[in-house]
Length: 73
Image (cartoon, rainbow, N blue to C red):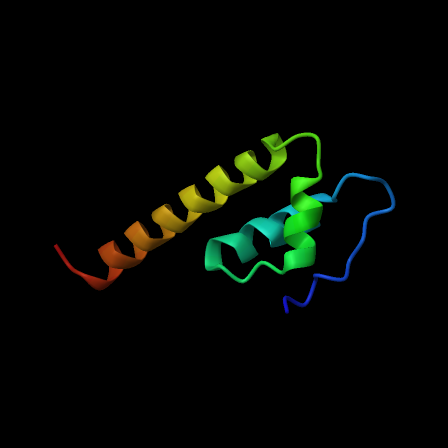
């Protein structure tokens, strides 16, 4: 189980931290069923899509920089 899976926000919406943790867990395929259910009961998927696109972009840029640093031209 992911370490932050027990966190609950006070309102009905997940916090930014919970969204980021959910997206990272989903990217690695380790999302808990409880978090999966919580995420899909939200009215808007926009925060999850935005965070997902940003995290994938950061991953691609990081990998490109790492490869360019390790493999000389």
